[in-house]
Length: 125
Image (cartoon, rainbow, N blue to C red):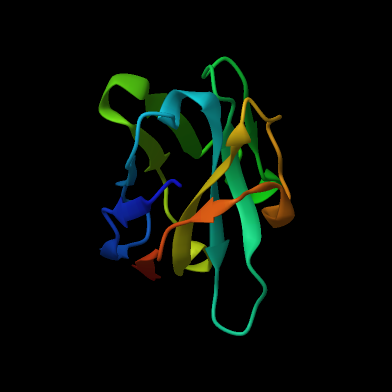
């Protein structure tokens, strides 16, 4: 069982940066691909970014490519999402997710087994 806790959300103005963190419990963090998803009001939860369990591969949704960077520190059981040049359309609840041990880097929510409770990011214009 993996428990995930997100932090770092907040209310910011457009154009600034924000870094989200997700800390996992347990000893198996380094074996899980990790992903970030987001859900805006009235919309379905959608893929944002993912990183392989080794950290060697990453994947990004087109709307955030070039602005967001996902990274992980396996020694700290933490995955990060660095968000630069934030836009009002980035406003959403951001969720951290962990895939199965040694699983592939996925972009679909069904490929992830464990989820955090989310952290709100609000970007004002």
